[in-house]
Image (cartoon, rainbow, N blue to C red):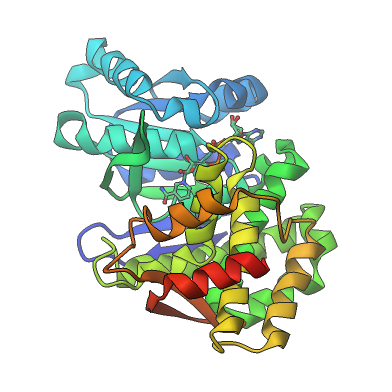
Length: 359
Ligand SMILES: NC(=O)c1ccc[n+]([C@@H]2O[C@H](COP(=O)([O-])OP(=O)(O)OC[C@H]3O[C@@H](n4cnc5c(N)ncnc54)[C@H](O)[C@@H]3O)[C@@H](O)[C@H]2O)c1
Ligand SMILES: [Zn+2]
């Protein structure tokens, strides 16, 4: 078993990674001593896929299961209060309760948010089931739900007591969902780890085939990077966590121009990374060779490098409405070389425009 510690001053915790870890998860949870009654929050699809495994794995833990809709729909006011009502109407109220989030990033974000506000904070555990949530969303304590006009607008920083990652869950993901997660893995490699980048290039077939040894290695390396960045800048106050936004400024503009419907987040990030690299090249921050290396790995995993988009909507979203917009210039994470990025606080809108036209 790989154990990666997130060393935070007040809320340190472990991330456990092991193939088939879910089978004996109860043993580890009991050792954490965080309560005596668990609410397992999961989505309908996960529950239907893993009903038997869930019953078996948690048979020694007193628990109740709460199911919410699949995906983004769960991160809503309605489901927030649905779950809170569920917690408060039950007799277990007097017991020491905790939440186990079993699902993708949507379940994790909702469950973490509820844990942070219910009775001013109860413990929670992350058991992520998508590649994206295993390497990203379950780590770092960012929780949120969406409101009508904005995504992730209502949220907290609230760390889980532990994260249990079982790559076996990935077997029921579609290929599309898997490569969406790979896009974030490429991001980690590009911002921090050339060795991971080479690993992704060299072993793409084994990774896509979910070879246990390689997938555990991939997840561990990504988790280490995320954990380190979170340790250095837990609440996003020092600008260090900003490097995790590599590819995301453009990705968010793209997703918003398509009303979060036509393109998945992972694919938008892939295109966003290409945009950031092209802009870096235009601003002489990296060589053409670096840009080519990035294009190579993105294509290797069948992720898109470009898309037809509405110029004015994306430009407007990038330049005018981006939350990083400060005094006329835009903050972007640019690439210097594979494994090294820089934050540029003041990219001029005219450079963004030029890069968009060339794109
Ligand atoms: N908190 C953070 O730091 C952070 C970071 C990145 C993303 N996020 C959030 O994460 C969410 C996206 O998460 P996601 O990509 O994990 O998707 P998701 O949670 O929205 O799940 C997508 C779909 O996959 C299904 N699914 C989950 N696991 C499965 C499995 N093992 N087999 C088959 N189907 C499975 C779900 O039921 C759902 O239908 C977004 O809301 C995003 O804002 C949060
Ligand atoms: Zn992302």
